[in-house]
Amino acid sequence: MTDSKIETHPLKPFLPANAKLLMLGSFPPPKSRWKMDFYYPNYQNDMWRIFGLCFFQDKNYFLDLEHKNFHLNKIIEFLNATGIAISDTAQQVIRLKGNASDKFLQIHQNMDIAALLKQKPECRSIMTTGDKATDTLMQSMPVETEKPQIGQSTQSYLANREIRLYRMPSSSRAYPLALEKKAEAYLSLFKEIGLL
Image (cartoon, rainbow, N blue to C red; front, side):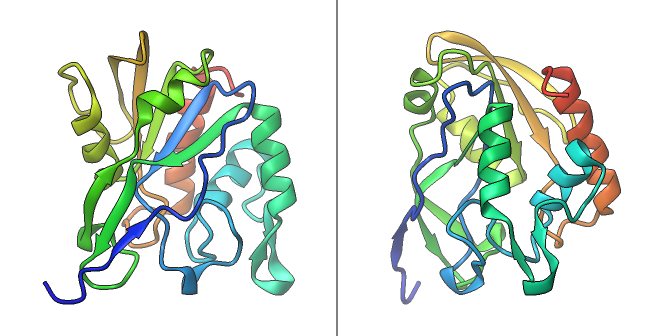
């Protein structure tokens, strides 16, 4: 493995005061892909389109179409109002191919998810957005936990409380599912935990 440079997570966890859901991806893409200094910053990633469809019936709600960018202030305002926290499952990684693909992401150090939850006592739901994030989270669980299927959930225990783990389809366009179908899966989760 040549050029095995360890990257440390460039963003602080986003933790609203009233967080009820913690959303976990794997790790941000290389900085060259970023359109904003926040989670899911790649314009080609569909996460904020999924959120737009679920909460506003408009996939472009969080998008600045004219500049091929995002409305970061709208995203932050929405997450704070709704109580959705965001972080990633990896604190440090090595990119084996220098790209954003989870397949070529080697986790060097896991994020301390229990420490994040301890700061947010109301948070009893965790959602992972992709297979790598789910597998990494499973390694961090202090009790044996069944890995949920895509679009499903499982019960576990973390940070001195019962936690419901939801595994969602990846918002990456490399994941072969139509945007509307992905949004349907997220919508049922948001309804189940009372965000909609």
